[in-house]
Length: 492
Image (cartoon, rainbow, N blue to C red; front, side):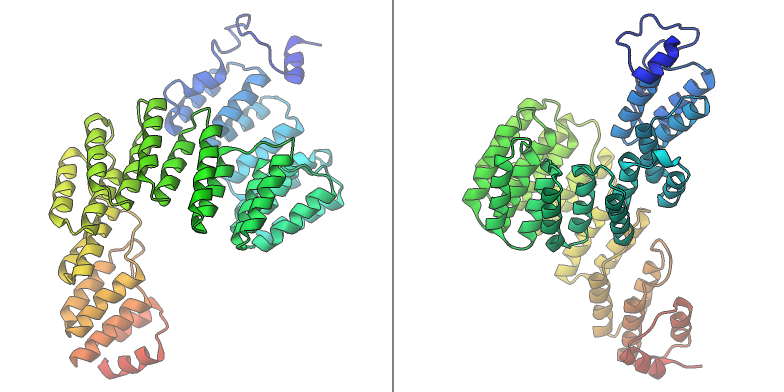
């Protein structure tokens, strides 16, 4: 057997020192692709360079690189690598085909993934390749297809694992059918499929969704007796959240203590959940204590951590603490994150500290923190609450002008149009409709806006030759009242 065939069949060698630099890359493939920071653009560029070079890579390298790219959500590059290496004669095992199918579903959609699956050799259609397709159906709540495929897998006597069952459990959780989950758990027990920690976590949340706190505790007790499963930090995060929602604060804090014990590897997400959940218990001392622990574990504290912490402090009405942390963040940040600014602006406006909010917006603009749609939405809601409709309309226009996919909520539109109707200001209402026409996708805002405009004309005793045409152009179905008023205000 040739050495290259041996490597393809039996996996990695521990050393790269003996590889021929004429034929093979001088460095590990995944390092080559990620050497410029691992952004989507740089990975694609480095991959194209590698493929054009005609240099070879061992199969184990390709497999490991695919794993790394998938973990970083560089699915398109991973698929291109997988396809190109197959075209160059690198044989795919059934697990490779399963990975390839998963990549297709993530980059080209379910139809392409189904086509790939159908065209696989029959001997490749086992639990490995059924799995990604089932997972995709469940993730996108394609219930009928998911249930049909799962049933077929059972009829074919394929080896089912907790991975497959977890996909179905996730489907029922996402589609708000928690009552179906206990039955699936019973099926797992009857077929001796061992649950994993995700199984227990989903089960626990499902029982909670059915308002059965004692049932949640039975699930936790069963997990503690399962020698094959250890709870993870999300287990206790979920449990604490469930107790908080049930106002069982002492039990919630005990769960959070367990979460801290289990977070020995200093997981950033775990720290952030601790801060958020202690915030929900309104325990400010614990919030600050965990924050100090987070900063010790992560001296170069990320924007997302400051965003989370300042959000919690604002919710707890600790504006001085939020301001202090904001100043600390500004003094050391390399990327001026408008999301953090927005949180503090929201805190100021909530406390009627308008001047501070306005000042922060302008200071941030000078620092490069350009207001986004959320910034303007915060001021919009403030002005609406104060009855300053003209300024509210300006905020709507400013939010739309950011170019983001944003539009005012139906309740906001209703309040503004109601104001113009109340003061019989047709010109103001027409001006607002023109602003709404700039929303991505065009149109005048739909039935709510047009009915508001019709009511405004009627209240002012004015007629229009164009409103009927607008209704027809936008193809909206007016209410009976709207139709009646439209007849009254319309002129030929």
